[in-house]
Length: 140
Image (cartoon, rainbow, N blue to C red; front, side, top):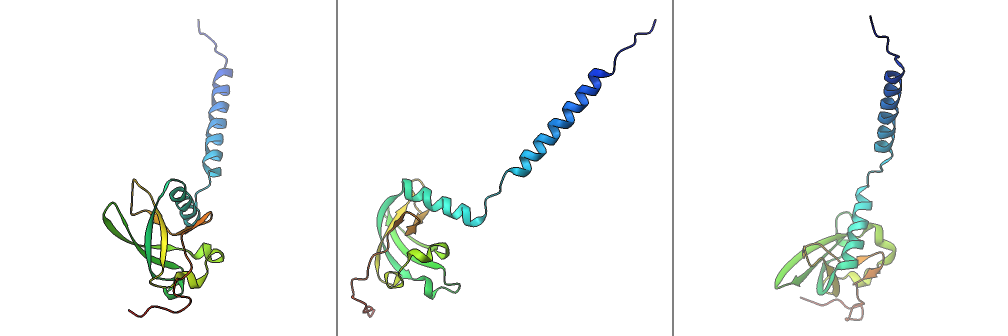
């Protein structure tokens, strides 16, 4: 006596498996990869929200960097001197060139857990200050 089984459950399992594979595939494709610009924007906002303030000295402005987009500065955090550069190309509309002169002081925000992670400006805050020299650059 041979038992005759209905192939209905196998068919339903196959359809379910294909639907599950299709759904996972669509979900993976729909996940948006963050662009480098978006990652940098999110980094700036994170440092702004949890950062500590310190005084900084501007070393070179964006107009002096090869691509015209880096702001160089140095600051001290917990007794350690850091020299950093921030890409400010997406923040040009917030920057006044006279505030970026070498030798100007600025405020910097740094991540207390990783003090080398710092910013001088972001979408919601700026540590750039007007020049104290009244437009006349210091002679070193």
